[in-house]
Length: 320
Image (cartoon, rainbow, N blue to C red; front, side, top):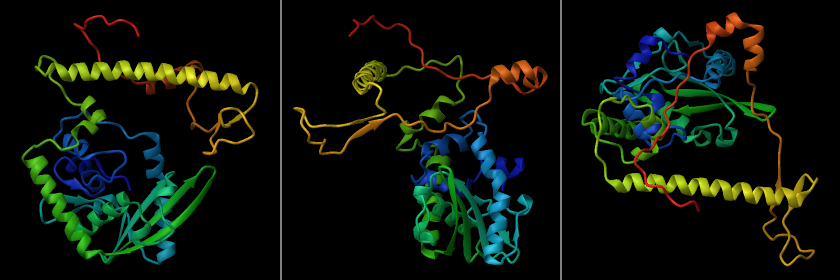
């Protein structure tokens, strides 16, 4: 369930259960350095996107399915669902907790259905979800079991699965110790995480002193400049190769690889190429929106900015 603004503020002081996967390197969207920068208040805040809003809106329906499946009545009041660990480091906000405080409910909606196994226990959960639930167990010592309801979207189809995880006592201890150690090293002592360069988007959003200038080794500038030039060359080469392939296809919708020299033998790798039209989601037609509902557009439109790399003082290079 959506946490309250006050609870969100606690996440700058404590490590929430949902951050544990990133800290332990099991979050596909965030790395440990992302969490460090966020907790230290070094980055500009971001807004949740529409996918996150839709997922939050669905959580109530998923929780209702968990209650029907388990026969357990869960408290879903965000004000009652904040649990601090005695270690002073961790905090948890589960989607639901049984009124006897023995059962946790966690609600998930995702299109990454391939990550969810057929085993309806801890073995079937993605590592990121299991670690989040383990963090909740750590903060809620009375909880004996967790029930996870997963609404899995598969293209135009969907599936609902229920996973049951009894308290994994040893894993809870190991994860708790690892989180406390990480907090001491990277929050209390302020050390950079080993994978800091992976936190590129967070570092772009860092709060920076507009008057400050720092000297760095020139090799860092040279490496980035070379990488940028190589990317541009690679993009041109890719576009040219794609153009040649599409030209060879003519009006055909697919291209099947053949052995060279040409023969009846098919490419041993079975390679096939085609352009598949897929849904890219829905988007607002801004021209129509602005024309037909100018007052609403004016009320809702907000300026957007982004930080782009810029160079000065570079020697001209010969075009390749």
